Amino acid sequence: MGSALHDVSAWAVPAFLLLIPVYAFFRRVRLYEAFIRGAEEGVGMAVRIMPYLLAMMMAVSIFRHGGAMGMLSRVLGPVFGAIGIPVELVPLALMRPFSGGGALGVTAEIIGAYGPDSLIGRMASTMQGSTDTTFFVLAVYFGSVGVKQYRYSLAVGLMADLTTFLASVYIVQAVFG
Amino acid sequence: MINLIWAGMIVLGVIVAAATGKPEAITQAAFQSAQAAVKYSLELAGIMSLWLGLMRIAEEAGLVAAVARIMRPLMRVLFPSVPLDHPAMGAMVMNMSANILGLGNAATPFGLKAMQELQAINPEKERASPAMCTFLAINTACITLMPTMVIGIRAAAGSTNPAEIVGTTFLATAAGMGVAVLADGILRKIYDRR
Image: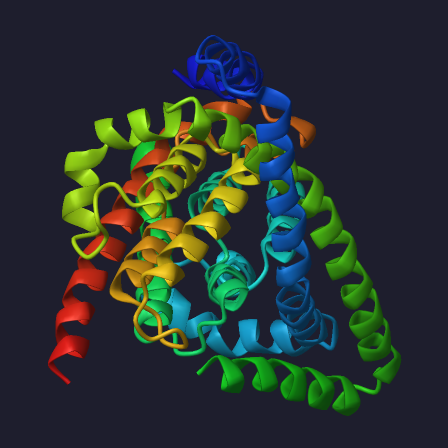
């Protein structure tokens, strides 16, 4: 099952690159002009989100490299332990909603320390692969269109994150434990 | 809320670093992350241009509309406030498909495009519309068939079966997405009553 999915994933991009232009060609789309118009839009969007990316990445980086993230992990360790998240995974659970790159680093650290095929390693892998960086997505997506009131979005995102973390721990425990 | 969290991270970060006597860590973190952000958005510009260019071709060939038509029953339930033929639907469908396939690079451009289209029909421009909230709920917690990046890390770390977490990831993401859609629906009703 894993390798079939892997194949789908590996071939998805080349397939898109082949099928879309070929189909469009027969529908008499002016391929080159259409691509340029779309690509123009991409450059504009990337420039527009730059300040939001910068603000978010800077704050997360200061929080982490200043040592505050480590301190928070130690303080919240018992709380996470009470709901079943092993203490080794607390830094990952805290990092995941804030920074994709940071969480990837923590995951790599955990996998390195405990081994990819250990229970903790599998839990960390599942957590990392299971959720997106909530704060980052909200800040950048809302920021790109100028929305300032997020309403209940943050609450929903964090609830989903918590669910995914707990599900990762319990499901890995049930499947591999 | 975002103001508080953002300032809180910076203030706490600086205070902890000051208390542990390593101010240079803050200086380095601030400058390096600022540079990394610019680099990242430029890299994103390349990938976004590629995908949005390809999507424009697909759009003009009628492919996006065709895919959106197939997903129509699901989208109608998830986004009752968006007209079925609106371009936002196409972009959201593409974003969700890319997420499911684990193509994060492809998902972001479609996602930003979808936000732009949703903003066009948002009556209050500074306030998130219900459709935006639902879209981002699904976006942050989307079913994942292929966690490509993690499998790479596991392979690099010498796992005997790097892809063995595909099944557990699928189940965990299904749980997360279920809660996200449910919580979004419930909170939307609560907020609407206010």
